[in-house]
Length: 271
Image (tube, rainbow, N blue to C red; front, side, top):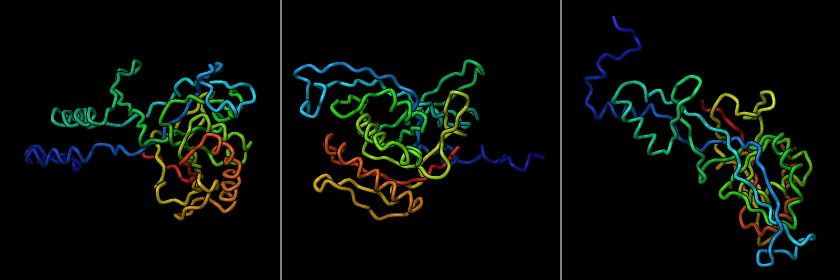
């Protein structure tokens, strides 16, 4: 007698129906959190033609050139790839469509599926320790032009960052030229293993950030205002967000940022 969990009639189903069933088992490729790991930066003097905004600089201007951030790999579970030839073809087509990278692990000799960072949808999570290292290794951002990799528009940080030196957020804003700062409340995605920090338990996402309340920058008025939405976090946290937003105004005005918002969010583990 076949095991109760098996479906012996599945091969007899029409191919179109089997394909639909296979496709329903593919992972949800939703916007994902990526862990930011340590980066190297170098500073070089600006030439006369490059000295944009040098009237703000006290030291004649300096071009901070940052090497591309190192983002920890996000692995996808894709058992469909190994079921049979039909399932393999469907999984392989999805892999190509989504731009998934397939590699062979040297230790286990098993296939691994790596999801590339999507510049238009994904968010980079910077743990507190990493923020401290970034802050201590970089000069003051004011009076500098920051050349950062493009499209790191969404940054997520632990809520504890709001209780630290207020200049840290201004430095992050100048370094990444971000449009959205997510403040993660509750369980944090990052965990420490010796000297390394990794995302605990696999893949993480932000829980419905679009519906949350937010502090939104109004450049024409030079201030922030609250956008209505679901309340996340405590009133004390919201007060810290308001204080942080006031301390960011100088940086926002200096960089001439048109769009910026701060949102409290929760992170959820999906795998």
